[in-house]
Image (tube, rainbow, N blue to C red):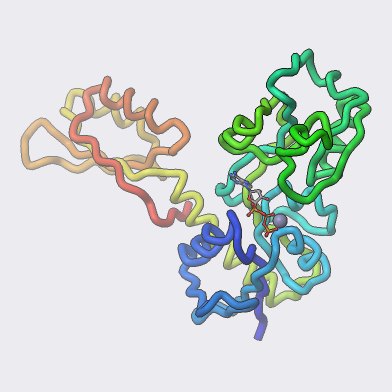
Length: 285
Ligand code: ATP
Ligand code: ZN
């Protein structure tokens, strides 16, 4: 019997959402007191709880078959792993920042300067591409305090809201990369494991596509029906049902989250009333 070993972060920003995703895929994790390992009761999968930085290496070695890490960690590690799927959570960016008091003319600012970071590989590649010659100071944590204590003149670190930068008197000046949680895989899977991975990815797709879409129900007067149907593509086409009141129909469809409010405005302008929006748990196209 094949078994898929998946490495997820033991404790940190990715842990909760990673476990939640498996749960949404219908996989029940038996992790009593969050040990090093856990199994699932209804899917042949074993969970290994590790530090995120170690996950790409374990996946490369085949100790884990797949794992969930930030793209930033996957790229920095330079291990033989592939991104199988973007997972849509833990979105952040890796950026260059400098003291707010400094004037910033452009990327050439960093020529001859020192930059503290926990991402030396990614930063080095970025600077090379931008033809900037700077000195990289690798440090493992609290990068944002480096300029304040005179360790470096700038930093390259993870930013989400920018509040950590602000409280350290820094300002973001360049975005080096965007990141989100990704499912990564190695190349040591046997046929049985590949089959399990396909099943898992199929379930993840259904969950992720569901999250990106909303089920919409609305009422439309008959004279607006065609116009509203044109606005609503739906999975194949919208469902149209007559209301008990003559001259009205109820229309059901699916709207993509990306331009949700734009679509709602157009629907209202076209005469839609009583619009209900319902989350979709899973969506299989
Ligand atoms: P570990 O102890 O496992 O090494 P860590 O301290 O390196 O943990 P976390 O801070 O838990 O890592 O972050 C894990 C990942 O979450 C990062 O690699 C990044 O992809 C993402 N991340 C980091 N900071 C943020 C943030 N502020 N907002 C959203 N995502 C973030
Ligand atoms: Zn880490």
